[in-house]
Image (cartoon, rainbow, N blue to C red; front, side):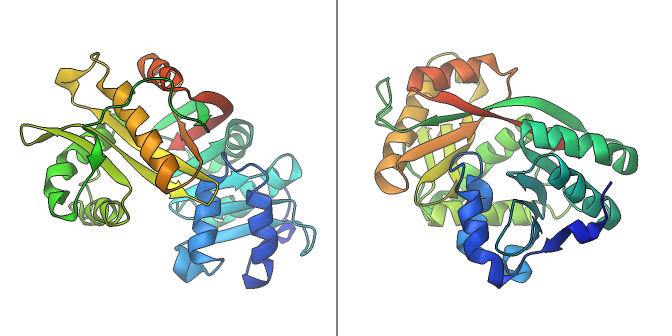
Length: 280
């Protein structure tokens, strides 16, 4: 591996160059782009460091190192340099996520030192849509209101536990997770269909830039699956997000989730890349 001197922690002087780098691929790099737009490169505001590979003025790659380890435009020597820095630092993240090739190489280099991973999802299609949905949307899907936090939260917990394999209530009793859901509601990025006082479909928008927003947390009540609620609900979120947030809506999905992939394809999403995730 390369010495850690091959990488450096980026600072405010690198911000314009870092922002230009993450916009080479608006869709794949929307998470890091959104974080830079919101917090710049100040580690205190980001809750993370951003490592750069390449001299100032010739930045080639970067890696977001926070709760997630996220490589951006990273390959070859850059991946090896980021892996060496991560190895020396020790694991602080709960996942490695990003373009499949870079994540796979990072994990192969880190695995002998970091050891066991709870799950490795090697192929996660990245999908995007930049036009009206191909199916009729569910007019009953609407923005969740601030007073409905406790109505939405159980569905969010169910989705997270089913998708990630652990409960978001562990550790701090769910305080941080609750605060994040509350924040998304306040930002007008949480949608749901409510029937009989319960959420039967819900989804949120997580990362956002002026160009792209990313759907997350799509969930349908397990007792109502297979009836098209997810397809029509996602179409409604796409319509409303394109009208109010960004012209391109993206998401990524596990390749083994055939039902979800079919639903997104019906809506009009097309695959534009492939992610991988290593979960700890």
